[in-house]
Length: 315
Image 1 (cartoon, rainbow, N blue to C red):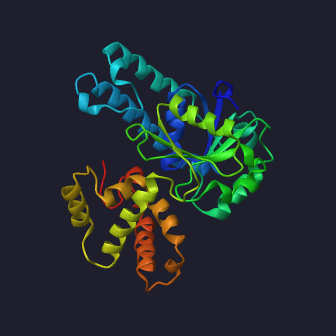
Image 2: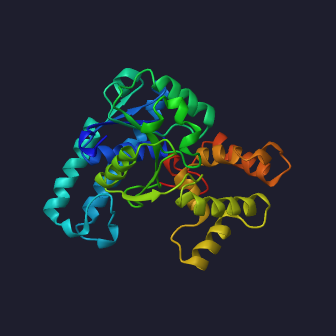
Image 3: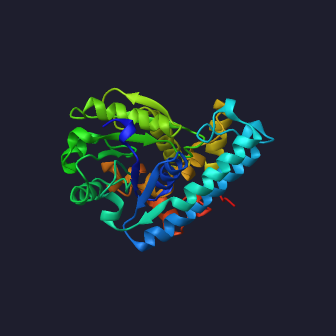
């Protein structure tokens, strides 16, 4: 498929990243739909969309007077004028008004040119999703997974169209962290890989090509060990959340510490990733303690930035 053929895009899943991906795609001018499993899922996704609308509008307005508010995903630096920023605020309103949320498989997928899967980071759920999805897609559709840790070859057969299946991974807060990691598997057709690279660029992401399958791609192959190390220090009582973050920020000059990053990612995703470690089944192991501690916070509704509280509180 060529990028010029992509008009209708569906994002499956409206979680922290799914909602961001869909809003950025709608902002970039594509007809965009979010497919969700249940009406309750729509109820959970809508506040995320509402929040993104305000973030985009406030960022564009702030750019009139504050260059530090710049976000690559919203505008090129050379295009910044008051008139252009107001025009883009209108685009935000239009994206918000036309972004569709549905639980209907046919409505979401029967005319989709490109589908981005962002469902739960759990293999059985992804396979079940792809098996049902195959019944509703036209032959033309290319599918990408946004999985943070799993590789496309794990699910290519389940899609029924392995040559049109690959990965497109985003970082959190994609309007500020505009990376689009593109990773195929051995059966991915080159033309579809190239289309996804072009698509990422078309929504103001910076495409990064992952040349061979790698769990975690480039970004998470470096980031996940940091986050796991921080979780281990926390679970073992070596340091508290604030001091672990403080050590990282001061020692490296990074703007955020690992637990601030986990809040952005969302603790449900962190929990699902932690469960994939076989050692997590042993409650006496450090991995088992990490899972238990994350589950305790999730059960209290402290799931991260989108919930208003995770390891930190957000207003």
